[in-house]
Amino acid sequence: MSSKGLFDSYLVTPKQLSEALEKTATTKTSKPPRTIPLCASWFLPNDGRNGMDTYRAKRIPTARFFDLDKICDRRSPYPHMLPSAADFASAMSALGIRKDDTVVVYDSSELGIFSAPRVSWTLKIFGHDSVHVLNNFKLWVDEGYPTESGEFYSVDTCAYPIPQLDESKVVDFEQVKELAEVAGKAGAEDTQILDARSYGRWAGTDPEPRPGLSSGHMPGSISMPVGELLDPNTKAFLPAEQLRKVFESKGIDPSKPIISSCGTGVTAAVIDAALREAAYGDESMRRLYDGSWTEWAQRVEPSSGLIQKVDS
Image 1 (cartoon, helix red, strand yellow):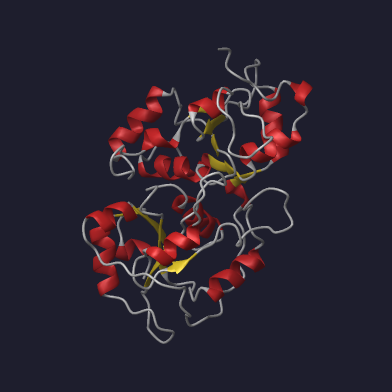
Image 2 (cartoon, rainbow, N blue to C red):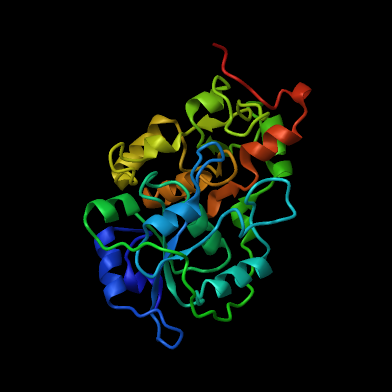
């Protein structure tokens, strides 16, 4: 059964997930469809908290934990870049997730929507189509659905096939650099770069959470802080119609290609998920810059003019 047979949209409510979990078993011998909750809690390096601790403290029963800082490209100098297809398959196998499982990814209750869309996006571009985002764990807790705590428990591992990465959904440094160098010039490609960081970091008036990294923005990029896409109280995604209004207010053209960026490629996926929920633009014209600002600010030359700031 496809994911659409279980859930009718990419975002899943606590009630929908609870009902799906009541109907599924997650043993090695259980038959599909299985619904697997997957905790993707992650915090910025200057936060002081970490995802595994929040997973141990409070999680959805039977949830597994996807560690963004470990399931990644260990050779990259930049944090939690996409893993190789083989490493991704190995991680899924260790988590006991099968190719035909429906996976619902969720965040910490403290932050609300934050890193779950990144993990869901990762599964999606590695060909795991039956993947959704819980909207959200904070509401799951507030509405009284069950939680458990304790150490990470053993699961029945499985053989997950090595997938093919959908490279059409990812953009690299050189591709973004080509766009930034001609931004605003006649005949330049009309690709829109949306930046999920706070306005202060985009403007260059607030520091980056990583010491020594300059703040600012790529030429031609649009400030699209993720907080504007979420309900200020529940930290869940806004309804689709409100999301569309946010994108319209930023002057984002749904007929043109979009690249989502952020600090390290995590909250860029929040923008991507919001665009999907709002049905804003063609999904085939959306890409994510994996290295995002951390790679950009370290690779461009200070004299190049490719780090811009807003004059105070």
